[in-house]
Length: 248
Image (cartoon, rainbow, N blue to C red; front, side, top):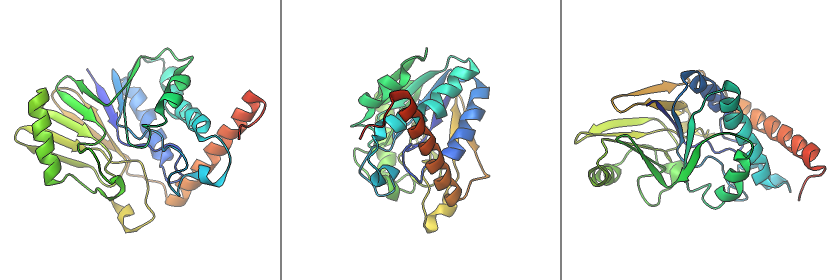
């Protein structure tokens, strides 16, 4: 069974690198994976952080995020004619919004999916974050406390690998006590000195091995912001055409 896992996408944040994510999805479709796992924070939510473009307007953000999710994920799967199951892990950003977002987004798509707090596939555990609480923007790698927690969960669940996200910097991969621990980076960009660490990566996983695919030709931050503004603008215009008006 071939599983592909992505870290946080943060659809709806002007700093989300949807350019790299779109390229990554195009690659993934060619692999024809059995399961695609999105490790939480698929959408950014609304009216919470200053980088959310929705702060500057009266548009209904869930409608726009749903439209972008269809374009970037569901349409790519549908148009490729593959039957990948979609597993979406609950993240801290989308917890309060996902029910109003996900079910309507999937209407009209013949796609098997599940929305869960964690998923065990084979002998791999997928979840958003290993700790109960944490400041994702400031979590830069796997800490000793995380290692202790992962060893405990691996023993309790009988898994040999744990894959999680929430880490907003680089890819982290280590093996401790026979347990493989992988933190996949977010697709968020940062306009600070840490941005040089940003390399968008995803993981291709079977029960025996993990392969990482990283997109080295990363766009500039300005390209990311312009792309977000453009694609959100297109989504708004399409919603107006469909609904006959824009809800406020």
